[in-house]
Image (cartoon, rainbow, N blue to C red; front, side, top):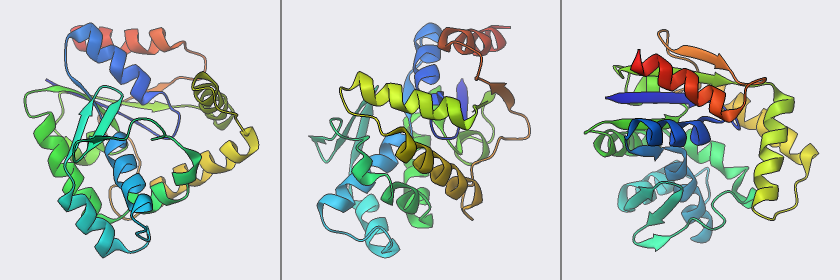
Length: 212
């Protein structure tokens, strides 16, 4: 069974996907961690995120492993700091590179070959267009900023909400308008507005739909 959970920045897809997987006894894969790992490696190695050839070569040569919320690249754990604001501007640039997406999509398909819950932005449209169940989470900009700020605070980091608002707006705009695998719900996806729902309520809607 493949369950695809897509959505924009801070829509709650990763947190929801993780709990859905736990309730259904399935593996969970957060595809976004793969793009974050490549973005961070590129920065560490001084690779310009706009150099599509160099970043694609990096993605092709790097072994990435994901386990829940943790991520490794070539055996080195990158989990700590993977959400740092330092990489916010480069992330949508790297994520839009066709070669990078092609490489990581193939790996995502292999990871979930035996089934699972996968969260991302193009899981139901590109990675697994034939997924058994597809969900697309949406939220207002105010709610996204609130969630992102809470996420930073849980990690003990200071939250600049105005900067976050600009980051969220930019990321969603870039992801929606990119020519390769744009952010959009699959035609057969169940769209869930999460604004006035608690995390467990969103999880229950998805689990109930699957079990029914």
